[in-house]
Length: 346
Image (cartoon, rainbow, N blue to C red; front, side):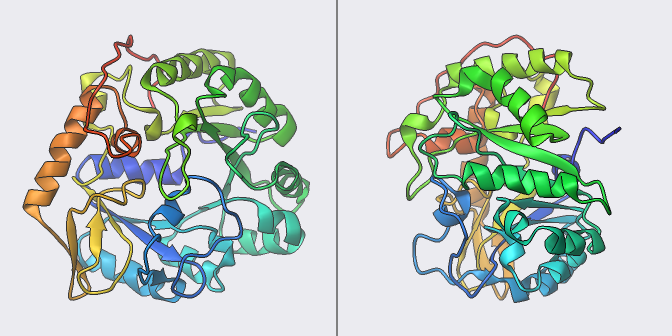
């Protein structure tokens, strides 16, 4: 089956890198506090809700999406824990026109055909599930590996529609040298249409620093991805590289398009007056503005400070979020790794 190498979300990110502003709407699927049906270590969602912040609720999202277009944002990213927990998830999906969802797979494993029928009727084409590959994701407390496999099985056994499936595989300091084995597991066991590799970021409150891959380890990851792309026909099985893997091996031109955070992508986490606006879903501790009268207002000084750090990080091979999350209170120190230009970029 011929598939599209990219994803709708990747397309929106690429638009943001060419100055078409985008907005992350960070919301909770139930109530006004953090809630999820899993408890993964280092989860970016939970890192935003360590305090008593009042989150954007699922009921607020459709109106915020509508409002975003009037504010000049060309696209919106829906950021939450498990979107299928929201009672109005179909309304939310319709508001953005998204044809994909990100999920941990639990609800698909449990509800089987009924939830897949709802996904089909909502226009979903692609389902992105977080992988939990036996022996390779120890310590991350991801969704039970049997439930993840069951979710993939339910999707592939659904006869009414053939969804495109992508497995998001978290790369750690312990599995970074095993990309080939993990790729074949995704292809042969999950029977997914592709894999997307992302780096483990030790985000608070429970991210594990020892599991976050070093820049040297990510260099090997990038080389492995390039080698694997030579093995598989992209029309049959896609191998994608998340921005969290870093900017090593990218041309200067690609580095300029690497990360829209702060420039043309901002993150809203609350509609409370004065609540912070951040540059990225993975960077909860950097403020570049605040909410004023329900509208995100950017502080030029805060933004300039972040953009300087972002530029340094990218030029030294890092994803800015990876660099910041690994500081653990230390002074910022860049370690530059020289990597030959990658044959296949992100």
